[in-house]
Image (tube, rainbow over all chains, first blue to last red; front, side):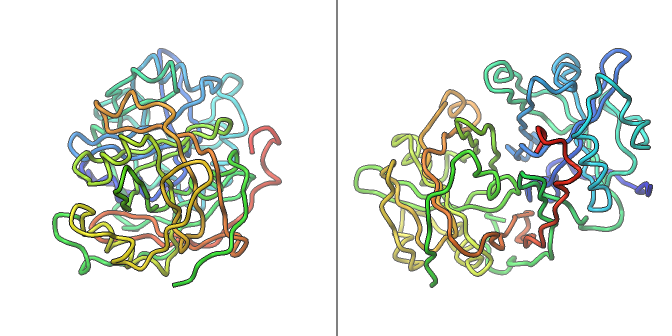
Length: 185
Length: 185
C-alpha cells in the first residue's frame, strides 16, 4: 500500500481536512497494546488551541486505551483504503493486531505515544483537552498538538459514512472566497 | 427557489444526511425574533434518542435565541443554495431579517417553535438534550425530535466547508454493505 510523504502542517488549519466530515481511523496505544478503530462521529471545536471533539462507544476495544492514555492520533484515509476502513470496523483489537492484519505501518509521532498510520493522507496527534463528558456522553474533546499532511495530493479523496454500509465519496472543491467577508473565512 | 416536498423520516436514521458532515443552516426563534445561521461544526452522538451535537460561537446573533429557546431546526441545503449559505454567514440577524433578505420560506414545525426552511432538502427539529457544556465550550447537545426529508432526491448534493472560502461538493455514493458484519452497519 502507498505511504505518503508528509510535512508539518499548521494545527490551526486542520479544519481543511476534518471539517468536511470524513471517516477517520483512530490509532491508540497504552502499555503494550495498540489498536486502530474506524470513526465518523467527530467535529471541529476551535482553531487555537486546535480543538476537535469525537464520540467513542465504550464497547470499542480502543475506548480504554484512549481513555487511559489520554492520547490518540486521528488518521485520514483516502478512497483506496475504503475496504481497510470497513475491515477495521468489522473486527476487534481484543482478538488481533490490526496493524498486522491490514498491513498498516505504525510510525512514531512527535508529541504522543499513539502511532501514526503511514498509509493515511494526514495524521493529527491529539492530547485530551477535556475528558469531563467521557463518562456521561462518550465525548472526548481533543487538542490537536501536531499535524502531518501529505505533500500531494493537496485535497485527498475521502469517504464519508451514511450508515447501512454506504459511503459518500468526496467530490470536487469549489471556491466562493470572493463572496466572503474577510473576517468570516 | 425550489421548495421540496417532504415526508416524515425516522429520527434514528438522520445520520444518513448529517454524518457525512455537510454545512447546515440553523434556524431559531425566541419571542418576536427569528434568525438563520450557517454552521459546519457538528456531529452525530446517538441513534435512540437521536443525538446531535454542535458548536456555536457566542458572538453569533443566533446564539442567544438558541440558548434561550433551547430549540432549533437543522436544515440541509443543497449545492444550488451555496451562495445563500455564504450570504447568510456574511451578515447578522441583528441588522436584518435573513428570511426576507434571502427569500427563504419559514414553515411551522410540529415539535418546536423554530421554523423549518422550505427550500432545504431536509429539516431536523431539535430540542436541547444537554446544555451543560454551552458556557464552557459553546457545545450544544440536541435531541432530534422530528425529521422531515424530501421525497426526491434520495441523496442530496451537499456542500462541506474546508475554510478559506472553499467547499467540497459531495460526490457519488458507494456501497460496501456486503462487507459489513450485520451488527456493525
